[in-house]
Image (cartoon, rainbow, N blue to C red; front, side, top):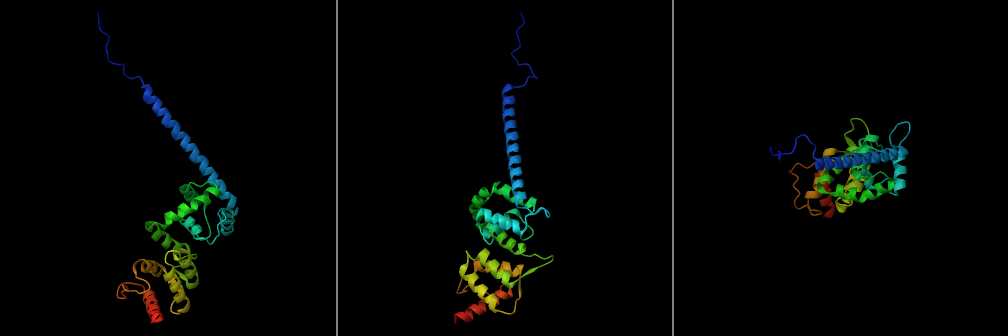
Length: 232
């Protein structure tokens, strides 16, 4: 009598892998549906603040959003929110920017957005992110085409907002200097970034390690001279 072959017939689906595949497939589908629902809520929230004619959230819309979040529109975290969205135009959010920011923050309601602000601030305060945020805050305030510099009054407000909590003394004295000097009417990006490096690297208020022969913007040489004259 012939013995039956012990080998399995080929071409038959493996029931276990089929079940596993189906489960992971279902999970992907459910996850995709949830993500799609979240995006619908993010879009719906955008249109509740957007200007109907421009299709963007404008300064009035941002002020209404701040009011609903119970956050002052001059709060630095609103600037941090703009940074997270990579918003290009000061006082305006496009739908694409809004989606980018809120999806990253996992926020599809005003309440979730408000609750996300402390984590956003911690993210921005990380040294690797803060340099980018600091330079972004300058670019965000360039409101005219081909504008390369910002007036002294606006720079003083921006310094206080962005850097005041980290380097209070340096910011206060530099603002005082900017307001009384008459050589500079505007500040450019190189000077803006130079002051940040100055705060991080230079011993204050003795300036023990400040070397004017190094490549510091001239305005900082003048500031140090003014401070040293003030101290003596």
